[in-house]
Length: 180
Image 1 (cartoon, helix red, strand yellow):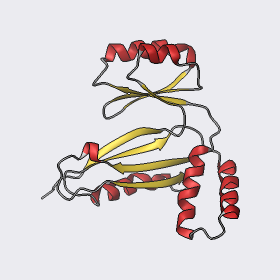
Image 2: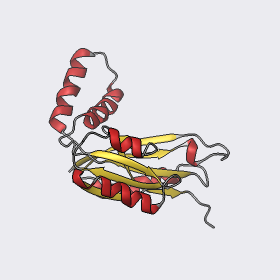
Image 3: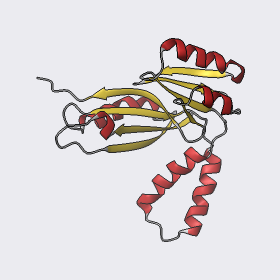
Image 4: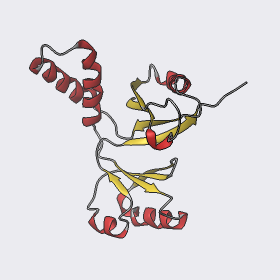
């Protein structure tokens, strides 16, 4: 197993907090370190200001480490003076670009849609192998096994965002609270 996990603390979730600054942390997760992800997320949350909300996302496509490694080697050949601390971010970027699956992610915002409309949307996707439906902070994420022509679908559901590539799937969120 190989995936990218990203922790994000953004303005949209933390408006009006004093001393708030947006933060991001990205991890490359394998079978060897997957059990540390929750602890890393708790530490990320703890580093924020009080009442700051942070989110965790993960890649929803299978990553291709061989393709990413080849791209990294090409980057290093083309950029022999690259700073060593930049190499990790280049690898993470290449991993997200190099996938072995063609899954698509549909982001359904429940502030715009009712649950019945989400069910109708999923039924409209039934010919396209829905493989995952998850609750998100503001609605649902629907993942299909492969891409397809979405023109009719986007006309019918203009507010549903299609993330064909490089999307991240919402996992959870947590708010740093004061504890006595």
